[in-house]
Image 1 (cartoon, rainbow over the protein chains, first blue to last red):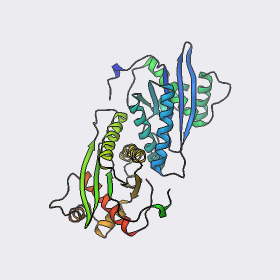
Image 2: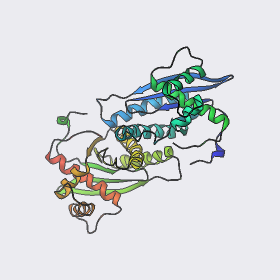
Image 3: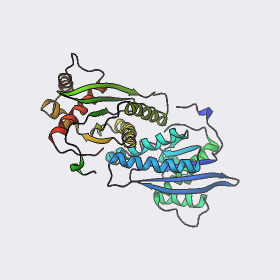
Image 4: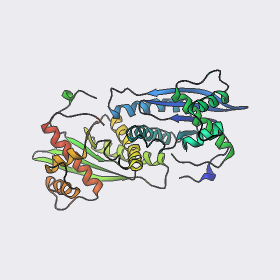
Length: 177
Length: 177
């Protein structure tokens, strides 16, 4: 755990939001602009379900490394680790992917900050119990888009990136993973 | 999933057994000898619990890469993924480590084979319900050691490596992760 006081309290120039998953990992690059956050790039890294688990996490790592090399984010924002334990099997496969995602962050010296689903919802909508649709609308409005972002993985990745963008301006940050 | 028929059915020259964990990952290198399996090397890769999760999985990956570079195993044998879901939080942290372990295997083009705890116990002792002590005794006897192997992580890593050694001689193998 790093000392909170060492972390910057201004929004990062480039934040990489991640919605982790073995089949699909959503990513979102958010840039600090003169009037607020700017969407730079978003996408999904897919893994081929016909491959072995080892080959799939390799696909994920290679995709993510490409994104990091191209955009060189300073911070990775990701959902907290224990939010999906009601589905143990899904959570365990997701955690394989999440371990690899954190590894690629550490390899590229990108700090990792995590948020609970409740924190993300509250920061974006004002309510920790907001629906998925309310969060998606908030993401659309914040980024000045005409339509809801699709697919969901990308919208969720932007939600956690936006949560970090605003948290970094207002509160002491917690570095974790 | 690879085609089973493509996999060798003779014991591998060098098999790397793994007992995965975030705090401690046990590893065991088993070599094919003229009269049976030979213990080449065993140890534990530790991660510093004061570091962030991202930094800890990086420590694990670096330790494992060193082992792979030095011993160049052909196969990694590891316990199956869903064996510890009765402790979801522990299992999820272990799965972060396991994802990184599988990634390093794929990066080094090392095949991964997994076994259930029951398969390992049955192969080593004749009973799928054997106790931990019975398995440890079997490992000691098989490797011609004078004492039970310590620590447990290393003994468990040799158990899965031995399970693979014998399975590769007798049965069609299943490549997974």
